[in-house]
Image (cartoon, rainbow, N blue to C red):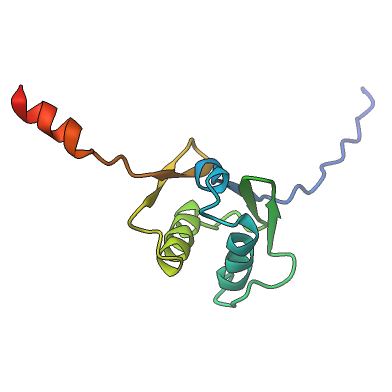
Length: 126
């Protein structure tokens, strides 16, 4: 009989990562990433507890983006979009910025594309 191999299965905790890229508004100094991070820390709910219990959510900040890591796999990416929109509304930026998907695990905050009067006149002439 062949010797059996002992294989250890490591218990890997399932986590979900969501990235919010705020590059354009941060470069124009419209959004402060530190205040956005504080807003998320204060508002994220896990198991109906707000703020989230220690260790349930990890929020890391870089110069122009935030990375939110949920230790629970059941967390929703859509919930981060909801909170981002809520932050924009609170800062009175909802009319100028929008949140769009940037891949499978992230969002991007971009400006709305506005037509100027000159561009609108050119389209009407055609």
